Amino acid sequence: MWTVGLFCLLFCSLSAITAQEECVDESAVIASVGITNIRVVQQGQILKYQKINANLGNGYNSNTGIFTAPRAGVYTVYLNGRSQKDKELYMALYLNNNNQRIMTIFTSANNKHGRTNNSATLKLNKGDRLYVKAERDSYLWAEADNTFNSMTIQRVAFS
Image (tube, rainbow, N blue to C red; front, top):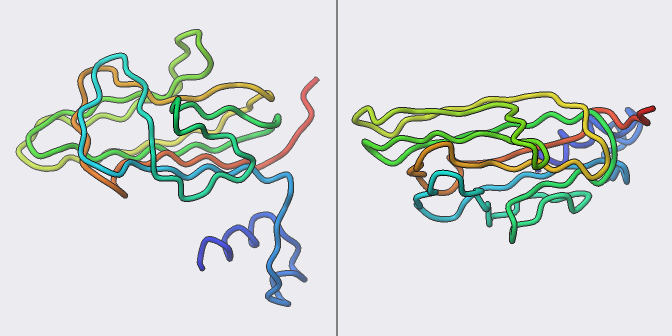
């Protein structure tokens, strides 16, 4: 699969790639999740992604919708959204429980299915929590169009 190749390219040695060995970096943290059905997320509600594509490090909890960093490091986070036809989508990524908004995604009710995305690179400490919350009532289209993806790009010890 292309994801294994990408994973190896990012986290494994060149010799493992050349030998086409399966490789696993025990320190890698990857969460790739999406939704499974059309839905409305009420203003202030945390979006709970149920479709787990990958959860290396077990950072994402589908019951709460919260990603908890299992280790300190530099993480890249991607949010993708697609609205229902003629409906608005306005979601934000938050860090911890102190209303620290990191980024937003927005699409207006514009007579079609609007698409939106954003990304951020963050220095997270072990135990930091990320979650996606509706800034207004948001009308989400289904499946691969609404996703949350997070991965470590560097594992570090913070002083």
